[in-house]
Structure formats: C-alpha cells, structure tokens
Length: 309
Ligand SMILES: Nc1ncnc2c1ncn2[C@@H]1O[C@H](COP(=O)(O)OP(=O)(O)OP(=O)(O)O)[C@@H](O)[C@H]1O
Image 1: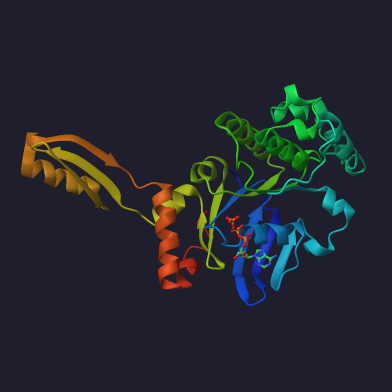
Image 2 (image 1 turned 180 degrees about the vertical axis):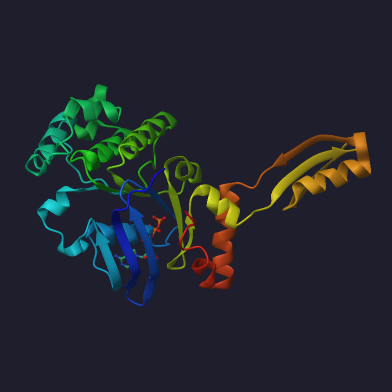
C-alpha cells in the first residue's frame, strides 16, 4: 500500500492516570490518512481508554494528541462530523426502526458534505452494506445482539467519516456477520480516504484488516508494525511433531529446518506423521505480552516503535 503523506492521527507521550493507577504511561504513534490500525492488548491494558481519549470523550493526564488536525476535546462540530465512532456499549434507541434511526442520524451530517465526500451514506445502501436488509423495518429492541452490533457499525459510518474508531467491533458476531463486517471495513479502507483504528482481541481479524498492528501493554506500545514485521522482529518458535516407533513427540524450535534435517539423518524412514507448525502471530503476541510483563523493560518498545517502511 502506498501511504499518504498526510498524518491523520498523532499521539505523543500520551499519559492517563485513574486515581493512583497509571494506565497509559507513554503511548506514542501516528497514522497516515487511509491506514487501518489495530490496537491489541490484554484485558485492562488501556485500549478503550486510548480510543476514548482520541475520540474526545475522555480527558487525558498528559501528552499530545491530534486527530484530523485538532486536539479532540477542542474539536468543533465540523471536526466531529468527520469522525465516526463505534463504541462497546449500546446507546438505546429501542423504539426506533432501523431505517428511520439511520436516516435520522444521517441527516445531521448533510450540512457537512464536501466536494469529495457526500454525507450522509444513503440509508438503503448502508443497510445493505452492514447486512441488515431484512431488519430495516424492525424496531431496534427486536434485533438480536449481533444485529445490534451491525447497527452500531452502521451508526458509526453513516456520516462517511474520515477517521473511524471502533472498539471491539466484532465482539458477539457470528462468522457470517464477521465476514460482512470485514468486507465493509476493507471496502472503506480501499477508498484510501478513511483512516481506521480498531481494538480487537482477535488476532486473525487484526491480521486480515490492519495495515499495522500495535500492541499495548503495561501502559506502552510494545510493538508496532505490519503483521509480517512483527513476526520477523520477534521470531517465535516453530512446533515440530512426529512419531517414532509408535511414540509421539513434539518439540519447539527456532531452527525447524535444521532440526528436521537432523531428525531424518538420525532416524531416516522410521520418522512418521511429521508436522511443522510455523510460529503464528498469536505466538508472537503472547511472547511479547509475557516478555513485557516479566521484564517491565521500556527498551522492548523502544526498538520497534517505528516500523520500517
Ligand atoms: N473510569 C475509570 N475509572 C477508573 N479506572 C478506570 C476507568 N476506566 C477504566 N479504568 C481502568 O483502566 C484500566 C484500562 O481499562 P480499559 O477499559 O481502557 O482497558 P482495555 O484494554 O480496553 O480492556 P478490555 O480488553 O478488557 O476491554 C483498567 O484497569 C480499568 O479498570
């Protein structure tokens, strides 16, 4: 992907303290226009806090934040119109019908159309995009959990945002809804106009959607790069399984090719059922989070903050 020169998001030394709990200690990253960023991290790492600060919902304890050129708490209405938000919690509009609610919320954005971006998103088209065609005339309170989540996503994008924040957007989705959501995000990303930042616990989802993955742990970004870069920077161990004389064996190694070669040299045709499972992004993630937890070493983050491009 060719990156735009335009910076959509800039976060420098962000700090957040709740009482005596320093949740964000020094969070620094930036995003170019059109990039899709996935923010990963264990429960309680501060992902929602980070997203809420960037949206302007939550004040911060320190550091600099700029989203589409504005400091979020001071963004004006036209800035707000360029931001889309999909929160974890559902704001209830139970009696509204899906189609009416989207048309109503969308109408707020009409005044903020530009030469390039027609706002809002056409209601029927949007409903189809999020896979709610059959539910368009249903009241919101009649929707299932997964359908409400799709509606959350529709509400987040109805104004055709230039910057879209999604906090665990696919929690509770069935595989079909997940696929439809992925297609929607990839479609938005393909235009190159929408910068997207999402949090997720699903590594496969991060790998599929994101240009860049950032891992937040212990108040800092401990890794930042494309899925491939992360795997390269933190080479995990491959898993080799085999059977020998009816006995099953398993071994983790960073040098699986050499190991397998030695195995055959020693045992030849007696080796059966050989399987080599390469180290996955999940292994990388787990080893990073464990490493950061066990060492508390800020240098782990310092070496990888700026991905090579
Ligand atoms: N309003 C608040 N007041 C005090 N502490 C808070 C508040 N909101 C969050 N916290 C604490 O800040 C930490 C980070 O919470 P946050 O919700 O940002 O994490 P998260 O990474 O989004 O977690 P999860 O993956 O579980 O959603 C947690 O320890 C949480 O208890």
